[in-house]
Length: 313
Ligand code: NAP
Image (spheres, helix red, strand yellow):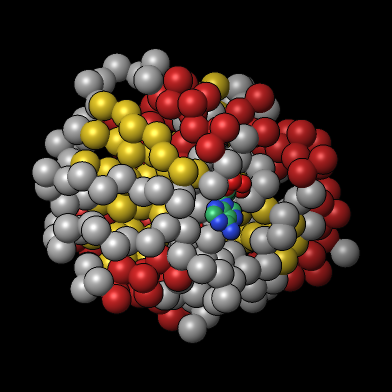
């Protein structure tokens, strides 16, 4: 029985979705990593990480025993699942929807930089339990830098959304020292509490709040627009804001990567603005997570290529 399961885990295809039942009888002999989500079927993290690990194994044979899996864990089972992942020696875990916020109360320790975001996407095994990190901000900053050659420091940033992804981005923007942060959301009541939380961070950023129907219009320099709303996930969605009146050097980063050209990117293209979707953010949050687990440098270009070939058209 055991040897059959062992063979199954080793030779399982990358799109196989494991469950809590599989975890209970887990006996993979190598170093296991995994993403936990609900649903998780769509995740391309196994393809990205296993491609990087194969490349890393060519120069360091330790990594030939490392393998990244995906597990579907319902939210009400996360508190039961994490101690079991720890007992089974999973060295690293990524968390995706809907686990990022609830994990904050389930880890033994939190990286100080992650604490301000109130959400965790990366866990590292330590003898006393899992230590929590948030690498989404790193991924976003690298994504913007790679796509546009721009940093958030000193920039005007228009951030759309007030959920978990927007909060991580707002923390990053203040920590990186953006000059002005324009926070916009469909439900405007969520903006003041978000701003009040973020304002507790050290920094000299100036805050402006707006409803999506009346975006800011007075510019001294072209802003970086970041979409952290779910508007655009469906092909039929309208863009979360209209970009009329934005300066011609405006750049637009949409965290959505499936579809590849969500509504805000199409709106930006109409105005001739430079655009990028969220695939680079996904890749570089993964690069940073694998650096934390492996304490080695990670080939971002290999992960990027794997993500491009695994992500749907
Ligand atoms: P979340 O916590 O559920 O927040 C959703 C946000 O989207 C809220 O601000 C919500 O506004 C807004 N929204 C939903 N439907 C809308 C619509 N039709 N029009 C305008 N606003 C709408 O979700 P999240 O975790 O922050 O994720 C937000 C987005 O970021 C998702 O598209 C997700 O795929 C993406 N993301 C990408 C990456 C990456 O690696 N590339 C990482 C994380 C997240 P209300 O407050 O008014 O409801």
